[in-house]
Length: 64
Length: 571
Image 1: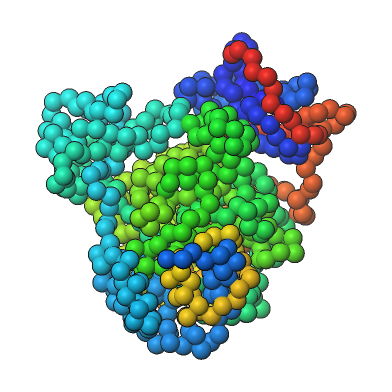
Image 2: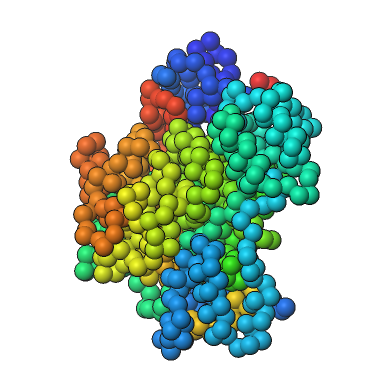
């Protein structure tokens, strides 16, 4: 399964998770940085979580 | 020396719980185990005196063997290096290949004078933030290198955030105390010396998603009363030799061993160079106090009830020391992996540069959302101990069964809160090879139980994770609390107790939880079972908290069944 963050233009910002997980409740945390560790700008971002062919997404408002 | 079997190992350490009174009587004549905990911290004349008193009670051959492996004057820091945290404008550039480039000026002159021509990153993971790229180990090629002089001169330039020798810190409790029938009075005591955890648990129980990082001698994550609460890195696949989550650490599933630089933060036999006894169990004891699996019919209860334990091992099994270099790297890991609370049951005096060094680590961790909690020390003094005395750290002193300040606890206005730290029953490591001499010591002085993986211990080392567990319990109810706000909840809702010396208010878990439940309207009751995705879907979004966010946000989701790796696509 995989969890990733994208900006409003659909550009990939950060991969949060890429691996196997057991069934149950899980949490990933985004620290507001991109894949290279740079702090990203304030704005609206989308987190996309994909597993077993199913995809969910949610909006994150980053306000610095 | 012949190694004991695993069963004997376990039994030897467990012996401390069930020691017959006669066995302790001889020790009490000279010093209490509390004193020995303090001695382990102080590393001073007093501690050597204690050591001699302890060794004097041993048969001559055993005493000689113990003396042979203790260090008369333990080294205070690692040779050949200093630790430096650069400012953005420090005129010093680490180059690829491990060499240093310094602009002309005082820094360059000092580096040249002391032969400081190479470096290593304190936090070697890739990718690392620019902030943490300025955490450096500066290495000297001079055989006569003087770390204290070099650090002092570099600090005096005013061009660094902090510079210190790579000092060793000491765990603040090692030797268990008198034999009592196992009981956790700190959780519930008819006399009111406890911190009212059952009442707090009536209102709230800790969430698995709240993480307590235990920076110590390792945690036995196979222990039956800990395994279910050990933090697991969601982005790491165990034992595949790949850094799956790209955080710079391969197979860091349960944390990291910064003392041995590997992915297995399990306890290892670790001989304290001051006492000559094994202290490897310390981290597992601390972890159990904070978050042993609770209500599982096994062992004891942990303060947080169910929060996750991240294992950050910082002890070096070869030297028995805890170098500040390992501590600094573990600080960064705890921040990067989003621990909520960092529990540190160790400390050291404020040698030159040490206050600034720990303040820098604490400031950066706090800015990342981590509340640092630290033991105040066991030296019966008001002298500052670090990291506890750093601003932003919740410094915890110890109380005893009579609701008094524990007679070993440090004190002073810099101590923020008191919590039980005397005769605390908790878990100890299993499947652990304790050395023959330490076994004999426990057998001779504390009796022998043979089966129980639990024991009693004294120290602010025990008070610290108890307070940290309460912090995690509170944080579970309001994840958006900042470290400062969280610490203030604990301080504001403590009980005023007329101690003989100031150690702040005594932690009251019930009042602390009640305060945030009342503020947020969180409904009381047990933690609900994990939600299931709706509509037969494989995955469901639970929440994104906080949102809006700054600087970080947690995305929680539920999986209906085990999820495997998604084939990689190009990105």
